[in-house]
Length: 268
Image (cartoon, rainbow, N blue to C red; front, side, top):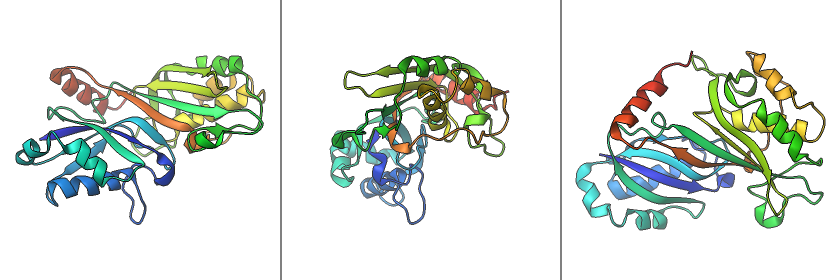
């Protein structure tokens, strides 16, 4: 049977999501804890909604895993508490839910939403936020950041902002991209899209920051969308400012399956 896990983690101590030999990863820690509960032959097919890079955080990550159905009744009411006892303090599973086989954490998702936190004050991030807030060495204009963001919304080929993978498309549909300045002075970028390619969010943020500090015109990031290769002019923003905050899925089993089939098709 298939289980959906709602996961949060502080990415500072991880070499990203995906299992890597000799390195600590979120998937590695989760697999170890789930294996303790379900046995060596128990959990299989751990699949995540968005594979985060080293240092990137998550408060709304989602993954699924398949487990023996006979083991679920005994664990259903206590699995969240048991996982809390098995996992290190920088990763937590907030909910575990039985879902239809049609649910795919990666392909059934309608959208992913990230937030990027950055401060432009001279003293940098305050100590208690140093792991989730990047520091920019120049003063940033909220108006300029939003002007740059506006040109990136919509369906485009984001090749200039992505690390291209063989046989993979770089066409994405960005439904939301905007900035706000919170009462504490922190600038927060919100970006939501159907999916993201590797390094895309941090590259978009890096390009917009160069507009925000006055070194590039507001039209520059959107002008890069005409390119079909990654742009060496784009600076990738530091990983620790980025957090995955929400993944949205269809409500019905039929829509879950339809969405997964749609997502698997190569974007044209």
